Image (cartoon, rainbow, N blue to C red; front, side, top):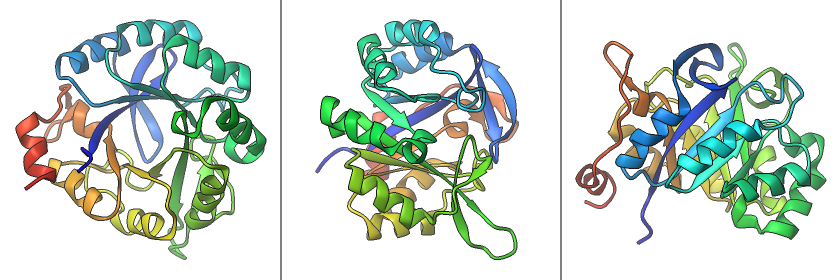
Length: 254
């Protein structure tokens, strides 16, 4: 049985780390390099950095900061934010990034994904999907540009497009659940996992280790979280943490 990966997801704004709630009100939580050092000690499976303002500011990745991050990081590293060209993708790989995560450009320039997969392989190209539920109709729609642009696509429509492109994974993020720590959108996970063959990485809403297990049971191939690994839940004090091997075994293998 393949081991279920548990992936901390860290949000970049400028040179610092922030945490959002429903993609709003980014709150500074610390320095990325110091956080990486702690995760190195905890031997995490994989780490993801998302620059939440790069696309909004119409700029590319902060390569200088990413060089510092990749130099310090001892685990597989993924990055997303502001990626619009093959040159940027290639440079990210040269810096030591192992997975390039594409969100806004997946729809505006879909040929970028196809070309990147042809050159670098599907295992290294990941798409991300941010989903919001309309408060009245309860209809779920995919958004880009940090949750500010409505694509008009349903989650299944978007996922099938990404599957056709051949991306290696799909990070499935619930805007409504982001930062609340009250559990993932399990119905959404199950919907994408059962309607496509693309491996799903669940993100958005994890507040306990049991939530990770529930996401796996809903069809996720891997689980990711931000607040769970950054905050003490009761007081939201910053405390970088990660489950022990025994906890992981109890979650997924008993």
